[in-house]
Image 1: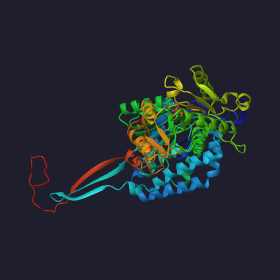
Image 2: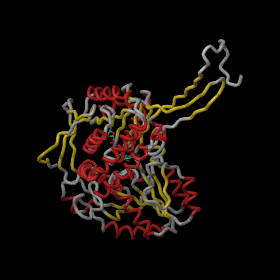
Image 3: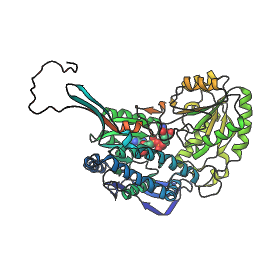
Image 4: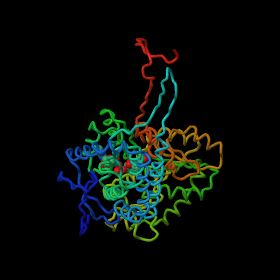
Length: 506
Ligand code: NAD
């Protein structure tokens, strides 16, 4: 792998300022489009993680006690700074993740939806109040922030996922520690500067860079009250189990294997266009990317495969700096090799390779981590690639003979993040949305990712814990409900002791 000339030395962001790493451990940050190492990111030690947690803990009470409207105003200023700095953010996202500028802009725009919802935190924080519930007593339930909370994020959305995990957490009054992906830390560090400029008090926003050493301290430290994790399924399961064992509130979102069912009555030209964008966009590195097309009936399958082959062969793979690039590289050389191995293995197990992304010139000749779009037909449930998430542009065709068979196969899969059906038959769509056991469902929608004010999460192996990312559930996840019963007696009013359990209808 080529080394770049000027390698940036990155920092943490603790207590309102950039802080150098002290552990002596660093990770490489690459530009996936060129293969060059562009930065070194510090990997925090346990002591550094503790210092960051302590700073957040100290800052929390004043932020909790800040008026909700004042907090919302700071979030609003942060939102404006994100849009004012859009070009810089897009450049950072493209440089460290390899995605195209259009795609980076798309993720930023979706991330802004979470910030918009967080600006409305005062509305979501409203509680319940009852007067005279018994003997001059009034009762109310109110939402209070948890304290120090942590978000651990994946590489594939350097800004959208961190914004979705953290904006509401800040707005409802917590002190937030983001453990950004060590593969894409530069965007998160820049976001820290924007929070500071927006007027967020020091210590309320922390970026703790690191690997599992930092994560384990966040999971075990008693001062951290909630963990929001987004990443791969094995790590999500570990985070959930370890966090829960240490008494924390945890939501851990995992990987996806997302199917697109195509009924014989669908417009196949429309389906093909929808599939290609949803399947190969961002080099298929999206938890909601369509992994598998399930055409119903052999005739539907033969027709759509022919249309897809022509369109896929015309796709342009390349750097975000080149005009007309449809998608860029995967995140690392390791990831590239793992995707190629999955294709090799599927072929050995009997898959028919319709489009072969291993053979493109750019795949062989560039130091960037490129793989071309690959389409594998005649995938069956016995093959490893049927169930395993492949985080790169190798997509499947699973031929089914009925809608019932499609629903059965999908419901038997472990990952259950997103799914979609293309049809003009309302009955088929209704049966599908009712019977399918998947968290986010689309009807004639390529990627059924909910808008920021609806809840986002999968089922089964795609989510551990009950919370959601995006949506009003964020305000519930990051607060605890306290119920207060209060009575204000007239001074000197006569009272007696009672030893019976308090009853309100005497
Ligand atoms: P990952 O699981 O490798 O890493 C995610 C985070 O966990 C990173 O911050 C990483 O430092 C940390 N981590 C990794 N291994 C760890 C360990 N052993 N102990 C403690 N912490 C550890 O995921 P990734 O490769 O960065 O991201 C891609 C994955 O994320 C894919 O599986 C994708 O489907 C999933 N994802 C899911 C969603 C969703 O909403 N469900 C969204 C985006 C990405």
